[in-house]
Length: 64
Image (cartoon, rainbow, N blue to C red):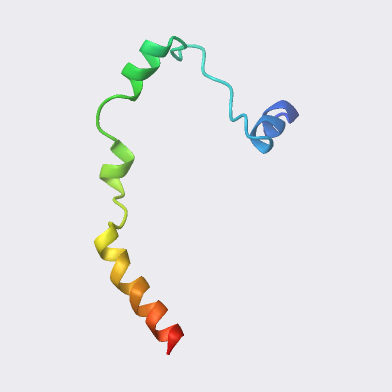
């Protein structure tokens, strides 16, 4: 069970507190964020070409 401070932080958009060993200097944070996006590689989203035609088809069918 989470404590009330954690619930309030998540509810009001502050997120979870940083772990003890998390980088806090801007350069260190950029270094931690650079590199490949593992989540995007693992779960790729649809591209514009894959979404545009079905959307145009739906708009055309609504207009008819």
